[in-house]
Length: 250
Image (cartoon, rainbow, N blue to C red):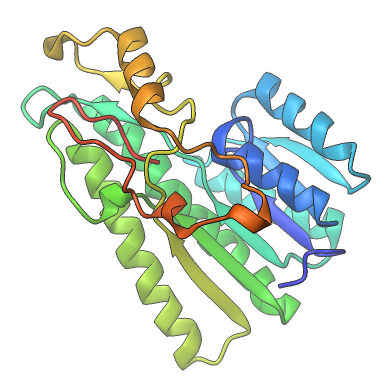
């Protein structure tokens, strides 16, 4: 896809992968609808992206709120016209064993990591089809391939995103819809997901220490590498080290 003049939608845009996507898309000439629940971080992303000259707008959005996502899709369509690219990136993390995990925390994570992807896909799919040149990208994780202790809820959501997206891709091909569908599985990307994660008190994990440990082993930056040196390992997960207190990979 040539991005210049196209409209892209990115969730979880206040930091990390989402922020890097917004900046890169804007630099390539795309107009971007960027959303997040973190108003301050989102504003910083949009302010920097707008320096490229592209039209970049901020939307405060909880992707777990289905009604809000449906309304967001209509607002973006009305504001920008065609919607060509949607990246369902927003995600959170939870560290807890199945025994220790509360229903509240489980519902919180699944509502964002799986519900947010489904909400965003369903809300924007008609607009992507209508554009005649649509692309949908759902962010899973290497934890969508392998289960890890203390990551049962995160694993469940990311496995589900993978299955949901693979099924949709086949549906679009069978129906000959003008939408390409992609599922991305980042490895150890150094973002704020570990710092903002919820953890079970019973694990005895210090959140600040967990964030420092994650930053040390997650050696890949969310910012794009120079084209001449870009390698596929960024999404291969080879930099990810597993432990019994493993933090989410992406």
